[in-house]
Amino acid sequence: MTTTFRQLAARIESERAPAKADLPWLKLATFGDLTTIKGALRHDANLVSVTGVEGDYDAGEVSPAEAVARLRAANLAGIIYTTPTHTPAAPRWRALCPTSSPMTPADRDAMCDRLNAALSGILARESFARSQSYYFGATGDGRDHRVHLVDGRPIDKATELHKVAAPDPVTEPDDDDFDLESLIAPDFERIGGALAFIPADDREDWRTVGMALHSESKASDAGFDAWSEWSRASEKFDAKDQRRVWESFGRRPGKRVTIGSLYNLAKANGWNAKEAPAPSRLTFLTPSECQATPSRGYVVKGILAPGDVGCIFGAPGAGKSLIAPHIGYAVAQGRAAFGMRAKPGRVFYVAAEDPHGMRGRVTALKMRHGDAGDFTLVEGVSDLLSTDSQDLEALKSAVETQRPALIFLDTLAMAFPGLEENSAEAMGRVVAVARSLAQWGAAVVLIHHDTKAEGKTPRGHSLLNGALDMAMHVSRDDVGVVRAKLTKNRNGSCDRDLAFVIDTRVLCEDEDGDAITAALVDELASGSVPRAEKLTDSASAALAILTGLEADKPDNATCPGVPECEWRDACVAGRAVSGSENPDSRTKAFRRASKELAGQGRTIIIGDYVRSHIPLSNKHYFDDLGTFDE
Image 1 (tube, rainbow, N blue to C red):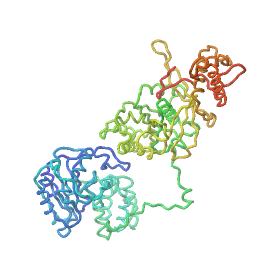
Image 2: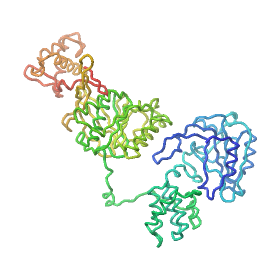
Image 3: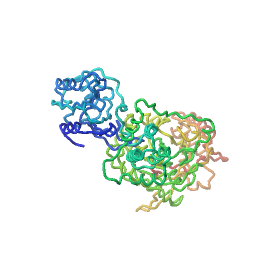
Image 4: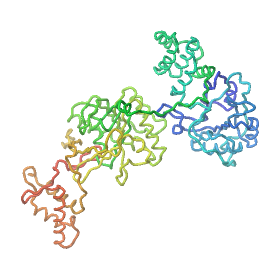
C-alpha cells in the first residue's frame, strides 16, 4: 500500500475495532512472495526493502508527549501513536520514522539504532527484528488513543545520530502482536484453549464462533471440525444443521466476523490469553505407541519419503545427472531402482542446465524402458533465487496442480544463479524454495557439486546439509564403476551399495552419418563389485597402456588378450610407468605395476596373454549430461 505519512497518521487516528485482533497491521517495508513452511510471508528472508523504521516502547514510564519532544529535538520526521493497551498511567506507544527512499533490509539495522539514539535508548528489543510488524488503531471507545505527527527530516539523513546500548535483537514477534504467520495459518491450539471457556448452548454465540472460525480458516474443513467438536458439548447439536449453517457463512452481506470476536467471547467467560498456559508441544509415547506409529510412506523405499528434501552431489562428470533421471524414470513407471521399490507417481525433472542434452537422456531411457507418461522434463527454469521469481511462481503453480511425487532441480548452481553458496542466508533461501515445492507432498532432490576435496557433504554452507533428509555422494573409480554413497539418510541405513557402469544408446545419426548417443545406467548387483583400491601412478599408467593396446586390436572380441611381452615392451619403452633413464629400472617398475593390477583384479592373465578386467564397452567417459567422448 502506498500512502503519505500524513495520510497514514490520519488512518491510525481513525481506525477502530472491538478487539486488538481485529485491527489491521502495518510495516514500513515491502515483502516478497516467498512463504515459510507454514505459509507465512512475513519473515526476514522475504523482506525486500524498507521505507522507514518502527520502534516499540512498552516500559510504561515515558509518555507519548515526551517521545514527540525527543523526535523534535533530533529534527526527525515521524509518527508517535499509542497502542491498544496504552493508558496515561502506563504509557505504551510506537514510533514510525520514514526514510527518504527505499533501503535494503540490512540498512534498517542502522536506522533502528538512530531512532533508538534519538529516543535515549528506550526502545524494546522487538524493534530490532527486521520483519516485526505492528497493529495500529484503537479498541473500544478509544478514549486514550493518541496520534502525533512530527515534522522533520528522514531518518537516513540524520547521520550524526550514533548507536547507543540496545537490547539484544530478536527475530520473532513480540507476544503483544500476533505474528502474521498466525493470521495466515490458524493457531488451532490457541483457539481450542479459548473455546474451552465458551458455553456452546447460546445460539447467537454459537453462530459467532462459527463465523469467526469460517473466516479464520478460510472455510476449511479444519475450521469446520473445530467448530463441530466444540458444538457437540451442547445437547442442541445437530450435524445437518451444523453443515447447513457453515455453508451459509460468507454468502451473507455485512461486516465480516473475525477471530477476535471468538477471543472476546472467551475473555468474557474468564479466558485470559496472557495467563493461559501455552499448550505443550511435547509428546510422550510408550513403546507400544511407538510401535503403532504409521509409516511415513515412501517415494523410493529406504531413501526418499513424501515431503523430503534430498541432494545428489559429486564432482563434474561423476554421474550425478545420470543416476537422477534413472531413479526418476523408475518412479514414473513404478518399478524398482537398485533393488529399491518405487511407488508410482508423477516426476518433474527440472533441467536448468543443458535441457537439450537431458532430452537425449530421456529419449535413451524411453528406448530402453518404454514410455513413461508420468515423467515430465521441465525446461525454461533459469532463476529460483530472486524474491520475485516468476519461474518459482510458475513451478509452484504446476506442482500444486499436478502434484508430482518427485521433483529434481538440476543443477542447484544453474537454478539459483548468482547464489552465494557459503552464505547461510542464501542457502536458507535454497532450502526454503525446496520446502515450498515439497509442501504438497513431493520429495525434492537437488543436484549439486561436492567440495574440491570430494568431501562427504554438498558444496557450500553447512546449513544445506543440515536441512537435508537424504544426501547421496556420487563418484567414479579408476575402472569406471560409479558408486552412489549415502552420506545422510533419515529413511534408513547409509550402508546401501548403489553401483553402476555407464552404457550408451544410439539415438540417431547426424547429418554426416555419425551416431548420436546418450548415456544410460547399467545397475550392478549390490555387493557384486568390490571397492577398488586407489592405484599407484605407475599401475594407472600401465593399465592405460594396456587398454590402449586392446582398443587397437580389431579382433579384440575373439582374441584372448594382448601378448604380455607386447604390453611390457610398450610400458618399458615409454616414461609413463617409470621416469627412470635405466631400462632395467623401468622393467622392474612394470613388474611391480603388473603385480599390483593383477592383485586388485584389474587384469586377467590367460597363458601368455593379458587383458583388462573391465570390458572395453564400459570404458567410455561421459559428462554429467551424457555427452559421448571417445
